[in-house]
Amino acid sequence: MNRRRRPTRRTPASLDRSAKRAAQKAAGAFDGRFRPRVVRSRKTYSRRPKHRGEGPEGAA
Image (tube, rainbow, N blue to C red; front, top):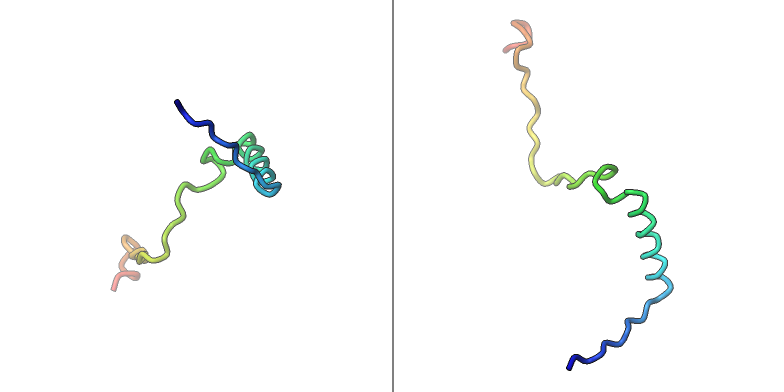
């Protein structure tokens, strides 16, 4: 037979957090429209764009 699990004790702070998160989910805050999916890493080197096709005075 399975043992019965004791219900977890919820603190008022955790209840408040879960209520806020549920309200945000209902508003659609976590469905990907309002937040980027990934925060870009600043550790990778980002190259500067080259000056291609500017004309004879821009080319070296």
